[in-house]
Image (cartoon, rainbow, N blue to C red; front, side):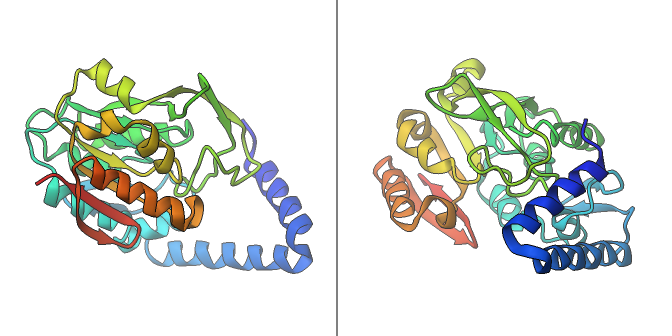
Length: 263
């Protein structure tokens, strides 16, 4: 395991190379401000979001931790899950991160074991597991990545678990390799027919929709974070059109989160 000091040194070298000494100074200032904000708001608190509790003490001091303290973390996804997911539906969640949306969603289900949460970043999985146990949830955790034409995926995740992508090496911290899987394989393994799909996979959503039409067609609702700044405006339009052609209508949109429903 790479030490915190080593990670900081690598980050400083990368910023110095890309942005010069001024960039290093800005990173140091932003990090100090972030730590102060977290301290002022209660560094070691447990937060309650939509009836579920999430411990903050062991989380890295990142913007994600500040968003948890502010109550804004994944707010559009949380709202959409509570509004649109029916209790009788199984759920497939792609991009579970530390499990905030997963725990809140799992509490909605008649059969909480009919819920699979895929998370590619192995560094996030211990937090995902801990939050599942702390909230008495029963979802299944799969440490794999959505990918095609390969049986494994190698990437370098960030300590700030938000925004991790298997396509964008967002840090130089730790290189990891995880098995690849597909939505259709998850549905087959779990024998899900009608289900709800929650998707936040940081740019992989375009390939998912384009390559797994039949698997997505089985969903009753799709709650998806779409990233035009990653996949492009033209691809975003094509993704939305493809979902509409599969029988979905746009139910609502908030920030980057879109809800596509068949009802």
